Structure formats: structure tokens, C-alpha cells
Amino acid sequence: MPLPKQRVSKRRRDFRRSHHALPLPTLTPCPQCKQPRRPHRVCPNCGHYHGREVITTD
Image (cartoon, rainbow, N blue to C red; front, side):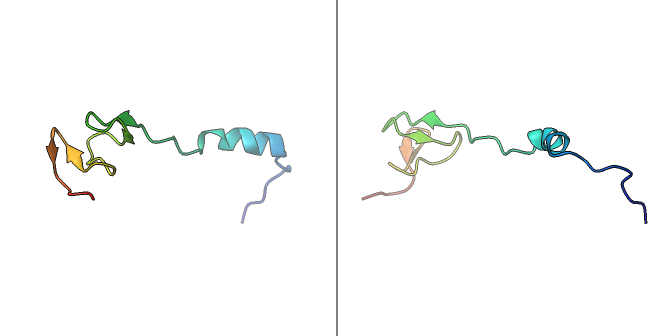
């Protein structure tokens, strides 16, 4: 089984992992209640999607 010839420094290791972070989700304001929501999904606050109420919220 092959072994590394030299130890990888913390700096080099962390530079390599710099692209592993998860991106933040995109949020858009709901046209009804102006609360942030994910695009193309029902608003969890007011239950509206595409101008009509899909989920009844109390």
C-alpha cells in the first residue's frame, strides 16, 4: 500500500479543502407576506405559492 512521502502541512490541507464549504441557500421575499423563502417553494409563513393559498396556516 502506498504511503505519503512527506507530511502535508495544515495550510496546504486547508487550502485544498477551501472549496468544500456548502453554499448558503438562496432566499427571495414572498410576494404576499414579504418573508424570506426558498424560490419555487410554498412560503412556510403564509402558505401561498404562485398567487394562491396552497397550505392553510393559522
